[in-house]
Length: 152
Image (cartoon, rainbow, N blue to C red; front, side):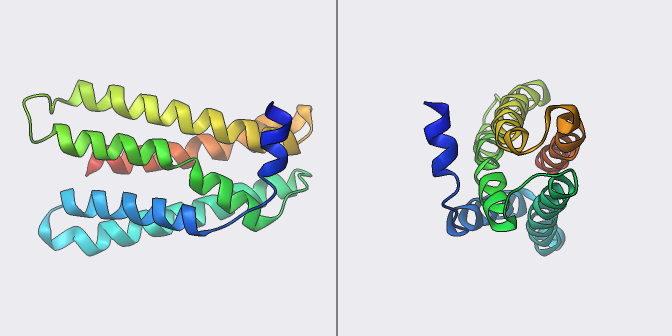
């Protein structure tokens, strides 16, 4: 069950998160104004990796026993729902379904999915009384990525 999945998460890789990060950065930079494409790409790339690093260091300071690369891997894979949301929003913008309220629905689904999955991961390493302090940056990390998706 869930314990088996959590044990498998100890085997980390960074290729999948890199691919997801590049996919999100490319999707958003293609939707950005022409003069801002490189800035958008760079911003998404830096926010994703620095944000994951901040979440990991925060959890470690709260007593979590996890490796930085393991956390970067899981938090990177957890961005996949937001990447799917960004792709869906980009595809719907060229149709008559490209409305803000539909964008918010798609983004909310991706945000909740990403936050829930990463909360289970981070929450298992932190003591119960400190769990909220560890999950607070996770929430803001995905909120910033979601804001970038809505912005571009």
